[in-house]
Image 1: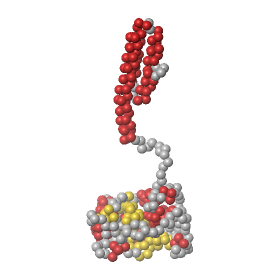
Image 2: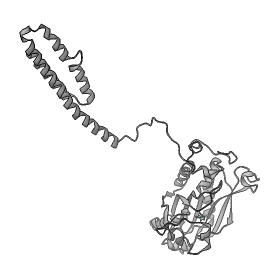
Image 3: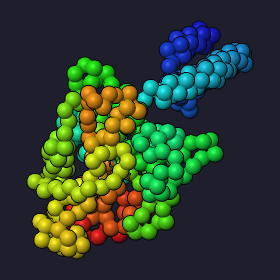
Image 4: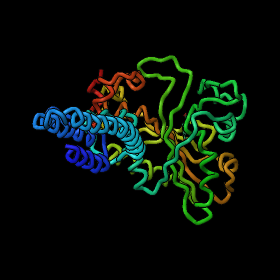
Length: 358
Ligand code: DAH
């Protein structure tokens, strides 16, 4: 019996050393300590042992049993710790390509339109830049030829912060930084071509058509000999891509201190083809995108010589475009956090503005 017990102990020791996980250990526990396990079967052999040796043999088996139990307990603590570490490490370098099995969310309609436009502009050689939402007076106004007390500031009721900064009222606030950052392009005889989408803030009374938080997508192109013809051709091509049909544009004079001349660009109504319908308020035209030739003062503030370089800028209303694109009639949908409204656009194609989204 002593021999058998020692053998069992050896067998156990060998196996326990190869156990790698708490699950392996549980297997071993069942194998040795279970009802039909090795220790129990040794116990059952006790009945064949002569009576005078029974007590001693029983003690030996009990010692082995104790040993197995204790070893498993200790080893279990050790393996649990390792297992925890393994799980933590696995969580740290999780596999980003792992297939998502849970129901996935959807992109916000502004994100969808923004990405679509970014693709179109990228194909035309434009870089895409992100810019701060908190800026200073210089970038939002002064560098754009809007000095203090200029009446043009009245159009943009601004949220000023106590830090002498403000929430940017238009994406044009990035123009100065972009011109400076991309000057090396001009030096390398390449045009500056950049778009910079962003969130803008103005103190507006909120209703179906007005929001205090909205999105624009600004663009600039600067090179030698850029003219209004370049601006018109470019805007027409770009908008035809956006609307996926040939677009007719018209320019009306518009005043913005940072462009000279400045324009309001209208597109012929895509619904009625210019005949007049409710969507274009019977005018046949939709106001879409202010633009113009960058003012020499703005180029100078950006560190460029206006005698040498010219350029155009445009400010697309991204929120407006998303409303047209998806037929959203109430601007409040965008910031509503209403998933029922916001999740229906991912697979939407061009929607008539007549089709109302609630
Ligand atoms: N920043 C102007 C606004 O939000 C829009 C604008 C007008 C942008 C003309 C431009 C531009 O780039 O050339 O009211």
